[in-house]
Image: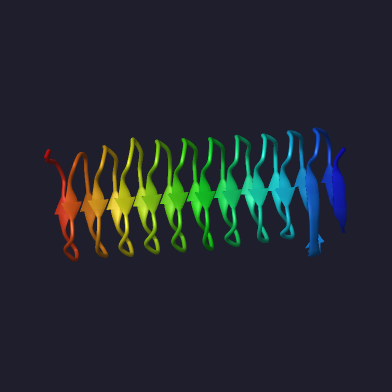
Amino acid sequence: SNFIKASQSAILGGLFNRISGVTTTDCFIGAGNSNLITGSVAVICGGNMNSALNSYVFIGGGLMNSGSGQYAAVCGGTKNLAQNTNSFVGGGAGNRALGNQACATAGQDNTASGSNSFVGAVSSNAAKGANGVVCGGSSNVCENSNSVVEPRYNTNTGHKNRILWGFR
């Protein structure tokens, strides 16, 4: 069965979905199984084992996705995490938006950990610096702030640098 311990909230379907928290209000779970909301004004549309752990979190669906930052969003996929304020993960698997206003759009095992950082797609990319951008490719790392890396096996450790093409 589903469980609600919050005011002005609803669970439309599924099993073992839960909305609860000390100050939780105005939440919605559409369907799915074993989804959890503990923040206020949070939404999980569906899927399984998804978590909205802060206020104003949106989880579109998927499996084992989590939004723990305020105003965080995960649209779908598997085992994705939007951890900080205004962080966003579009989909894919194992992607993490850890910084404030960080974005990991798709792919697999990408991490946007700097504030305002962005990772486009494909796999194992990391934008660690503030305002760092990895457009896509595989195994790229943008270490410092205000830098851009694309497309494959590159590391940018400078400030305000760009690596546009290259291979290891």
